[in-house]
Image (cartoon, rainbow, N blue to C red; front, top):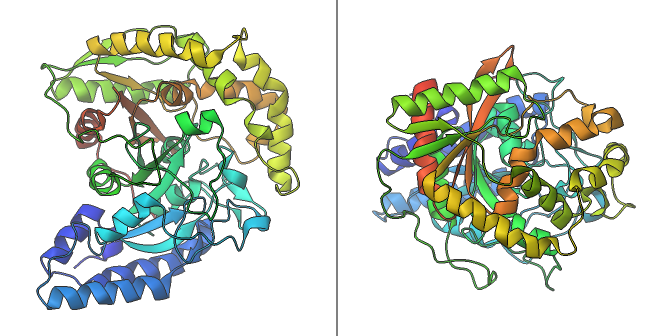
Length: 462
């Protein structure tokens, strides 16, 4: 038997059900992998060994008694430190919140635990989850397991690095501007940014946490994994009703059949701002894979693309000011100061009411996607950047342009699957498959066809 830490979540769940392996053996395997591997990458911030083993032993006793457990019984998960997990502080990556214990589990965490998943560790993030690189004064820098000189991405960089190195098969992150998809591109893992309303989202605190309109509309919780199949396993078990989130939508996980062959819009650089050759090659390779799988892939230009990006930044506002300046790390302060002058430039001509302008833009996209139910695009139009890159003002505008496909997805509220397509010059490359609202199933299906053609690339030793 190979070490369970090498297995996918789907394989673990199947093996536990078949009694090929005990839940305790699965957890012990992953704890051992964390012990030997985490010092090299610093992805895990808090190991939940005692709690995880206790749950595993309870699962094993119930299985021995003939009970039928949930569909992901025994599967370890990691939980980013801005997601509430009972008994563990929601630090947001800042020292001031190092002891901030929630009242209970976030709704989607509770659902996964009820389905049998076992939280095994907490994972790192940048200050307040507001950076595309993972580093903070509380826990330090998370390293990219492919190349320690490159960013592992952010803000869910801890989960991406942990998944890539076999410390967990599933991680729980969130995404307001690429925070599950960009780390997945950097670390050669997979992620699903679902439609807003698919996964309940709230903070389990004594008093409601105020959220900006942009946070309410653009931010979502999403799963991260090493395979597309595991993303589907995770999303089917973390979605569902919660009285804590009035924005949850009871949409079916599988929609009606689409007319075959499904048309895919392949888009790389629609506004001519540039794309790295390796990134473009990754998108075209994925397009070839979809063609081979029976999809109709056409290179087209989406509607009102430039205005979509401008309105996103206008609605979001300046990310670098959305945190308490007294609590942030020195590296975050340098990043904040580097980016602050450039946000007005990417906002374009200011709308008197960008939220009002959002609806006609989204409607135009919706009509276009009636013709092209899927979009194949880059995640970012550049590869993983060197550590320190985002602290230099000379790079700020280039980076904000590079993530235009990331933020378009958030602005429009569309679901997207990020997955790796290969390694170029030692640097992971990947794409995202974007679908219509609440059609995660279409994006998953297409992403699986790409994955079948190109294989998977993790777990790896850092």
